Length: 243
Image (cartoon, rainbow, N blue to C red; front, side, top):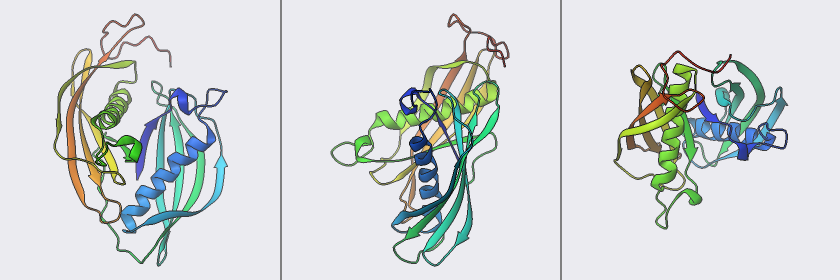
């Protein structure tokens, strides 16, 4: 399983690189989501072993957290997790952090199904916390749209490897709510390529981590445009970034 994210300035230290605690939180989120898909029921992080910081992650880079199950016990699952940094335009990948997470369920649980990511697609996942929701415990549209935009930007940038901005949302439909405590997954992929623009289709699903109940919440079509140093549209394949 892999999840992508972006390193923003508010996640960085005074060196301009991803704060170690934020990097560990990314891996812990991956371990919780992957563990929940295997061990349906209340799940907590019981231990973290063999943490190794190998390289810094600069602000503005992508991160990809990759996890695999290395052991399944009666009430626990052990997950080997890795965090890679990826240059937006160069595509350079650096292994930055590794660790082993032991997740424990309250009771013996059944194994849940896995949903694969489409070829050339990306997946962004978030846990819905109270700060993301309204007084009824329902995810606000704003955070949901931000996660969709993030997934769309990563999918488009990985394809173009040059500066892009979101120019329009061709369509965005809210089909069902997501609730506090659920895991939200946004899958995005490039579906159309123009002279200066890319169209990305995205779907957001919510999944209850204990029951595995899953619903489609939001669908969107986003249009990203390639720009030059002055902010004017430029043909795809023509970039001012030197890689």
